[in-house]
Image 1 (spheres, rainbow, N blue to C red):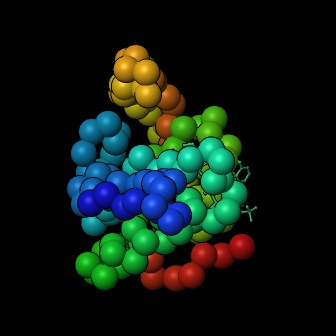
Image 2: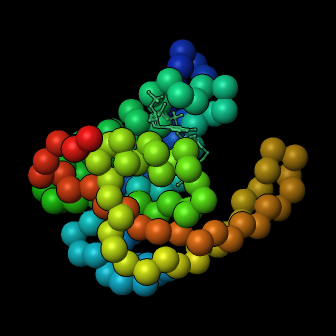
Image 3: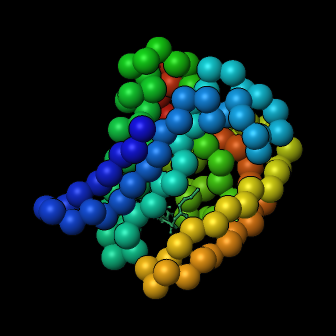
Length: 132
Ligand SMILES: CC(C)(COP(=O)(O)OP(=O)(O)OC[C@H]1O[C@@H](n2cnc3c(N)ncnc32)[C@H](O)[C@@H]1OP(=O)(O)O)[C@@H](O)C(=O)NCCC(=O)NCCS
């Protein structure tokens, strides 16, 4: 499921929700009943205005509605901005070993960009409100 954030007619952010994410590779350990959020991104000129948080909350709303007790996501260990956002929303380290994720995407000029990141997995329990 893809979530898109618009301001007027402009696309300013997105997130992707998959139902079996935390049970599939490259996760080093299975976390059952834990849908996964990925590809959280906000256009640079629209950051720090609550859009990332709103995208996450929209994903969590759907996950909770479907009766799942938790939701999780992967974050690069060096990604301070994303880690701060996730922590502020109540995501906590799932306590599993760090792992490598890699992929590729095509940039606006048609160039192929390959990436590789050391990641940790964070989970938010949907049974409770985030603690400070
Ligand atoms: C991470 C990202 C999605 C955050 O989106 P955003 O719309 O700026 O986030 P929000 O405005 O909802 O931030 C909410 C809170 O998260 C924390 N936060 C967000 N960005 C932060 C930053 N750069 N530094 C410190 N804290 C940050 C703050 O607590 C913030 O609240 P505040 O602005 O009142 O202090 C955005 O920076 C981004 O697209 N980064 C590039 C892509 C990426 O790294 N995606 C995550 C992949 S795991």
